[in-house]
Image 1 (cartoon, rainbow, N blue to C red):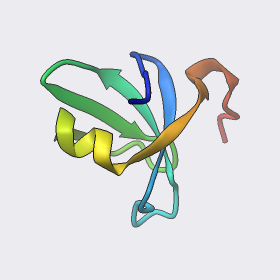
Image 2 (image 1 turned 90 degrees about the vertical axis):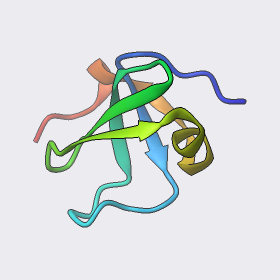
Image 3 (image 1 turned 30 degrees about the vertical axis):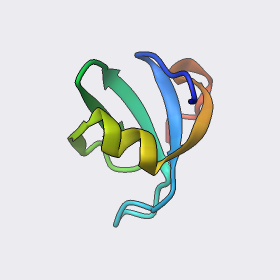
Image 4 (image 1 turned 135 degrees about the horizontal axis):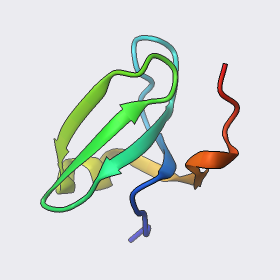
Length: 67
C-alpha cells in the first residue's frame, strides 16, 4: 500500500476533465479530501476508492509549480 499524508501531491489513474492527473491531499481518514492541482476543484472520496484510483505520490505540495 502506498503511504500518503496531508500536503502530498498524488497522481491518479484517470485525468480530471481539466486535463490534470495530479491532486493535493487536503484531509485523510475514512474519507480523503483532495484538490485538483489544475483547476482547484475539491473532491471527497471514500478511502478505499481513493487508494484504488491512486498511481503514486509525486511529492510534497511545496515542490509543484504554481501556474
